[in-house]
Length: 490
Image (tube, rainbow, N blue to C red; front, side, top):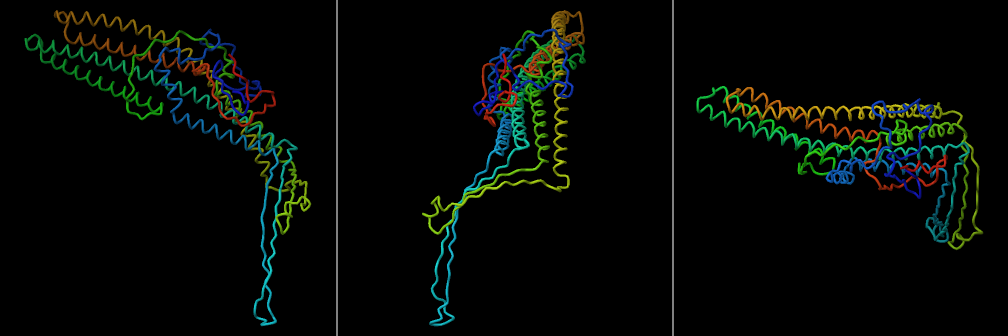
């Protein structure tokens, strides 16, 4: 993110987290990242554009739709606008306040007429007076109270901008995972429908055998019960599919009418580089936002400390007053006045001191929150990296199990038709295949959602090569020479 030309520029190519490098760990709660990830040795540069990596054009369109229509993201954008306006207000306090006033009065004088009757009111006279003036009031920022407050508000706006970037990242991840859940639910429903057909075929065979007297009524009842159970499972799978579609539609900002057409899940992309733990502090928008909160709290603490010192104000004005407009605008009739005021409260019942103590408490809280955010970021990456490996192994094992049970079921069906095994043995093998395939679908979906979690944890951008422009509180540079943050690096 860069403050330049009156805009905050969120650069989404190359680096996912806008903002400057955080302060040293000793100033930020003792956060000391490890030299490498314990769950992976892949330390290459974190890639961007991860949504496109799933090779699903429909997913890309869904994410774009959510960025336009999601109401929560719109609320986050509105909070950013508010924060920028507050920063502008804080900056305005450094400048003089100039006011213009103008007005006029008309006075009528009535006199008694004693020549005729002392109780009779006679004629009077009118007197009109016009006035105009220009007033100036300026609090001198001798102790840095106002400039520190301005800088604190500016840093707060940058934190809010990072929160907005984090909200965009989180929304892209939520849409992706919701879409994968829809796809998983669709495949589970297809699997359930397939086994309804299998159990219906079983029932036809058992019915024929029962009519021929080859099997008992128990076998027929068992076959009918299995078909009914499979139909209930298929209906439950359809309900789960519709529910997942509606959840996705709400994320997109649509009416939840379950109208999105699901597709099958795609393949999981190859393993991705994970970068270094220390890079998380610079890349993840939520961590950057927490760091900006710390910097903002330090500035507000300085402002609260300076507020205890004497306040010095310059006041002045130019005023004219006359009974005609022509004389009113004559510079010769103007009177000027300027003054210097110093105010030092002698007794405020501890108000200013308690405000300073409150600011110090906010500062300590911000440091603790930064530390918590950073450690949580490290944890999320480590867990996602570990799961990426573990879930891949689980899927491989389940794929081999499903293939084996499918072969066993085909053999069991032949043996049942030839009378070598009973119905109970056939149904047992069929249930094993159903459970293995359902678990395989679930494992594949878990791998896809975990990969999204990994991208989000690493702070990689979901899109690449685009720029968002957001009104900035001001265009001047920070004291460290950076315009509100470091330019994103690729």
